Length: 377
Picture (tube, helix red, strand yellow):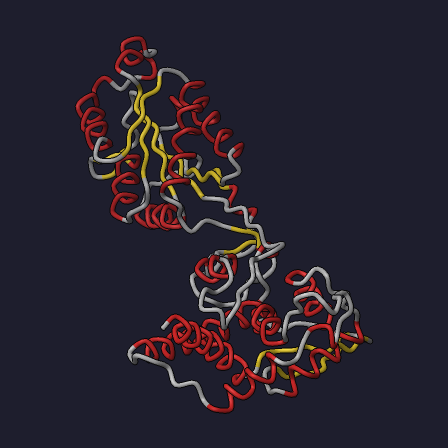
């Protein structure tokens, strides 16, 4: 039995359970969400998954008769390995009773794609049907993407007689007809077959991506997934709030928010950071806060805050001390809070948006829109 999948030390999972060392099926929806652009609502930011580039390996079941296609199978398996995927074959497993057939079905069910090679032999049978055909029918029933590679009509005319089951010609033709219900390709020799398999699998994995396998160390840790779950819930809450807001003509901005907007508009960035001349147009703290709130939504250290400010305002010269003073001002307005955590012998401060801060962002943008609308009247 050829089974490179035994090299995978993990297991497939379809839920959100933390991954164990080795390789495992993953909650792909979570990792895709993690890798997306920041949240468009603007109140919850999910950064790109820097450092979490994932290479998906697909498990591919290779089915055919064995004795007549040893060299061809070897070329196909090598082609699959060269694509970086995992070939699975049952040619060394003598399937001759129901228990073993059930085992074969389980192996097919684990696979992402099914490849069938058909030449001029029908293969060993069970109750009048070959295992090759039973495997094909089972893959179709399970909805597994199937591609069949049929020996071309031209090649059939010159195929070696010792590799032909003349007495089963009708069954072979019926199998070829069955294959035509799914994607088929034709081949003349082993080299062409390996090339056709490579091309077909490239197209199938591109156009019909399945679950696949990834290394457990190439995806976010359980802690990150937990944070994503929290952010997803917060996003849902804000979406509901936005939906409720959109049902009304105008959002009523609370008086305390209007007051705080005024205070932040009258406080300027050069009060905390060097880099601006007096005659320049100096950003106010309201603009700065709205520009960096996504960084704070995900939780940020002093360094990350200073880098976010520097990104939006390159003239500034943020350092450790003046960034602390800047964040003290933001926290004094209840827009963010801070918490100290200890990592080994090091203590660091993490800043996060408060619930009030998240609501403030929404109100501030809406208030600006309302003021613009008034100015246009």
